[in-house]
Length: 113
Length: 111
Image (cartoon, rainbow over all chains, first blue to last red; front, side):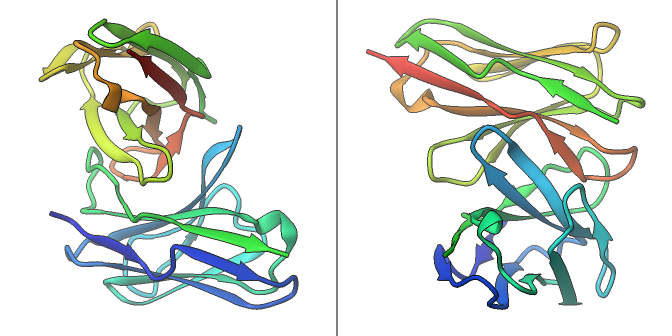
């Protein structure tokens, strides 16, 4: 079974802090993704990566950056957290080709105060 | 761009059959996914349709009509544990697993 692990289940940060959300997958998947999920807005793609050291912007990249130094690890960085970044963050991975399902981590609920 | 529409909420009774609809607009069709998400949990993969027709997988079936831009998820013999959000999703482009998700349909199954 694919396992996608997000380092924190809950996080509370202050406005202006730099925040790191970590995600690790154990299935040697090429593709990794960061989504955020908000009531009434659904899942929205922030950033994704198809290979080590490669990254591409999703639909809502503003205020975020990512890092993929190793194949199994994909980090989401909030350079200066703001209250509108309070959300559920979901990491996912997939094996690569079209039709491959996404495997999600359990999510990190981030609150920025 | 892509657009996906699903009803926001549905209710049904234990043991019944329910159909959750998804209509979509996309410039190039590369398959359609359905995911299930229980409250407070991660979405989990249910089905992937790329050809027209009905695909059955136990109590769950998924139907696709590419000409109509329409899909549905059919849940039979409903159980309380089927209470969840059901998400319809489209690949953003051919050969890639980046998905655009609909806002989801919250299904409540009552006794």
